[in-house]
Image (tube, rainbow, N blue to C red):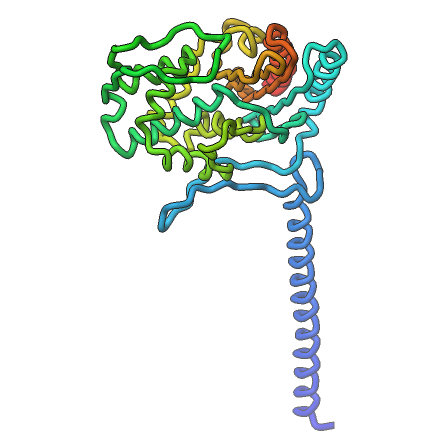
Length: 345
């Protein structure tokens, strides 16, 4: 046999062998990469608690050419970790229904450490009453950002408003004939829930800006021809969340808004269920008539190590016992959230 041919044949066989080996190695690597990618795709659709198919909603702010700021992020899946709190609150609600203290209630809880949530009837619509003063507050501060100095503008309360409401929880009101800065009127509106200050401010804001506060959050804009604008506990909580996140107003005005909400002097509901040492920014709202009363409240609770937003909406035949129900729910949530914070330390 020709030696040169033998060497060539051996060389070719070696090349073929190496090629097969390299191809096998390459094929294995590609297959493993595809397998890992498939596993990652599955894992990405599972939330932190192993719930498959839990999508994430990211609400972004439109109106810019090159950016879309994130307002808030929500998981579609309810938190398993918060289910003991939900069960405890549900037991409270059902017991008060049985006793006739309330006819209905809604509850929504959003915690910030893990961005988890839970709720009971949290998509049901209630009449928010003075809770609507929070988006008005945001609207005024948004106006200040666009037109610096608006907060120092003076407005005179020189005409009575035909407000078809007789609030039970009212402590302080602006006086006829007196002038107030917009900033002072915000204090009356939020801290004292004064409807006169609220209406005077409302007469001096751009309604398109007010509507945009809602539509920017993915919510339906208020219909000003309608008598009411029902909201769910989950939807209203968005306003409190964007203030805490400072994702809609700048840091200065988000801080001012939450500080002002911390001065709300209604102490019979959510605040009554919290230790006096805990900082809270909150607003309440009442609505209804003598035969049908609604009381709602929403708060940012600054629990050390585990801050959260809690919104409770209630309905009842009488108004006197509704604050106590909200207090009990607040107390129950706080105790379990505090325990969880201690465990995570």
